[in-house]
Structures are given as structure tokens and as C-alpha cells.
Image 1 (cartoon, one colour):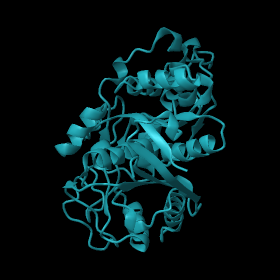
Image 2 (image 1 turned 60 degrees about the vertical axis):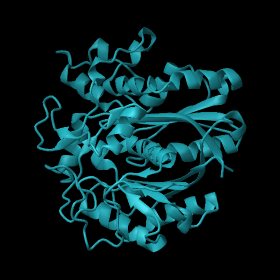
Image 3 (image 1 turned 90 degrees about the vertical axis):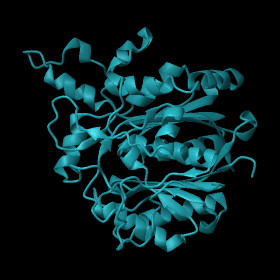
Length: 395
């Protein structure tokens, strides 16, 4: 089974909406900046979305206020997405369209704020008493209410693979007839827990991240959100792209380090290929997890070498956006769809000295080459791995 992909949009440090993202990639212009998050003194670079703090929620959504939900609403308003959602819901009924969101830490930034504003009694101030916000399911609550969709709604939190797994769950929901279509998405926003947490793991770089470069020394955290409508083919006859297959695995090798031989990654890749009925040689472009940490890049290159040849172009785009954690999967899926649309395969920014010890070469400069089939890899803490394969709808 293949599923049609209709309207989609992305908002990140690389740009708000698709045109801004396209311009960033075409011009090889990173959205990263020196850390300027208020009250955060970590020496690093971040991928911050301008204007989030100025976003006003509609009055009926005020009870769900958080910076994460401001970002989610900001993204929903781009590229005519809300209109596309409404049109599809009118056709099949809002109860036949599900919502599946991915996130890593949800609205934990709002929870941090609540604890800094405790009343003298030690109680949480009334303005912060938001049960549906202080929850991992906050994005699912918010997006369902913001769009008026009344089908099933869930939020997936499997670290950095969260918003890649939304496609897999949508595939299953539609395949089993639970719904006719799903709005999939992901959102994660910058906050203290994220930055100081990764800093404590010694994974944050004080420099611009350099995926697959021999000088790489850590990641740059980013924020962002993205959405896509996924549906039965007959519901989106004008769709240009299709979800052909997905693969998931959990190797549980270590809480924060990938399996050194990439075992879980290979399983996810293989399962995606099996479902799509494609071979590795059929894949034209792979958007890599590519975080710029020593262990991740080494492991992913090892896994690639076990399945692909240099006929397939591969790159990491995290030096454009920063590592958006729970939103990384959806952002990179959309970047892959954009590569299929334009034929521009993005190179790996800041990889000026590719690591000669890595087992598979990565693309460093943008290359114009048609992409018939594209794959994305998203690998999260605890060995939560996901690979997705997309194709042109007319194939």
C-alpha cells in the first residue's frame, strides 16, 4: 500500500514556510546563530525560529498557551495548510481525519516557567494550571483543537525519531480503516531542559556543527515544526508524492548512544525497503540523521555502507536547522520531498573536511539530480530508529 501526501509545510531556523526553506537550501544559508536564549549561558549555536514569542493564539486556544504551542500555531498558518485541512475534513468528515504529532519534550518550557513562578505557598500560580499543557500529549491536544479535527489524536515521544514515526502510525491507521487521512506533524521548541540536558551529556558543540567532518565535536540544538496531510490515494488525486514504506526498530543498546555497528539502523532501513518493495540501489537520495556527534555519524556511515553504494547521494541537513529533536523527522521528511520536487539534493553544510575514517561518503555541495525515490533516517535515544521512503506519485 502507498499513501498520498498532500499539503505540507515546515517552519524552522532555516525559514518560516516552504519558500523560505527553499531559499535557504538553494543559497546554502544556515539558520543557526549564537545562543541568545534568555537566561541561558551555554556557549553554543542554536537554531531559533524568529517571531515565536510574538505569536498570539486564537482566544479559544488561550488555555493551551505555551511557547511550544505558539510555535505549533505559527507553523499551522503557513503555506495554506489550514485551508487544505478544512477542505479534506469537509470531504470525509472531521472524525475521519486523525492527528499524530511527534515531540521530544512537548511544552516542558511552560512547566519550567511555572516552577520559577511558584506562589509563596509552594503552589502553582493559576495561570500555569494547565493540565493539557503540562503533558507530553500537549501538541496532540493543541493541533486537534486548533484544526477542529475530531478523529483519533495521539502524540509520539521517542526522542529524535518522534516525528518520523508519525508517518508509520498514520500508515497503520489508514491501512486498518481507522481513519481515511491523518494530519502528521512534529514540534519541539528551545528551552532550558533541552539545552542544559544535552550540555550535561557533553554533546553540545561551542561551534557551528559539522556533520561527518573530521573536526566535528557535537550538535547544535534547534527548534521547529512541520506538518503533512497523508491520505488514501483517491482522496488526494493531485498529490505529487507518496509514502511508500517505513521501517522501525528499537535496539535498546544504550540510553543515549547508538549501537556501534548500526544494527538497529540497518533493521529500520531494511524494513522500509521491504515495505516499499524497493532495493537499496533504487534510492536516489537519503537525508541522514547526521547530528555531528562523533558516535552518531560514525555509526550511521557504517550502516549505510552495509546497504548502499555511492550511486545513492546522502547528506545531513542539520547544519541548516540545528537538531530539532522531536521535530527533526518531519522537517527532514519535508526537505526530502522538496529534493524530489526540485531535483536539488542538498549537500552537508560545514563539512569542509569529510572524515576519511567514515565508511560512507556524504554529499558536501548541492547537486542537481532527479530524485525518484527518497529516504530519511531518524535515530533517537534508547535506539528508537525509523526510516521512511517516499516516491513520486506518478511512478
